[in-house]
Amino acid sequence: MTEQIKERKRYMNVEEVADYLGFSEDTIRSWIKTRKIPILKFDRAVRFDTDKIDIWLKDKEVPVLSNRWLSFCLSDFSRISLKQMFTDGDIMK
Image (cartoon, rainbow, N blue to C red; front, side, top):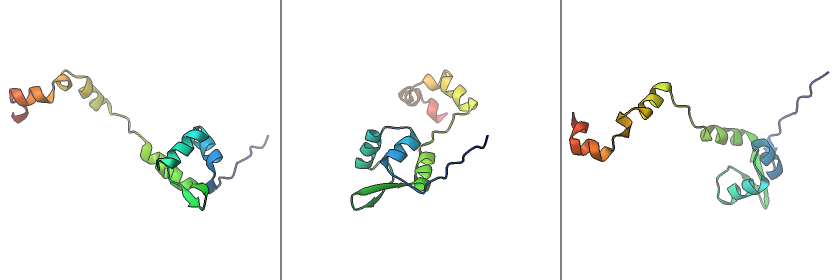
């Protein structure tokens, strides 16, 4: 069986970018109106540059916390409020 390789398009329309990102067309249109997604506009036609969408996605990535940082967040120290630290003078020690 031969595997078909789908050629990647440089520019996508709303329907295609919605499918590419896994969101509804309404969500994509909402992002267009609020300028939350990079677009190209030709008169009334809206297109999405696939390369720019990929960069935009990469910018949305939230890094994974390291185990060390996670341990700190769960430690007793992290439960001390900043106000308490300043009041007790611990921040200056």
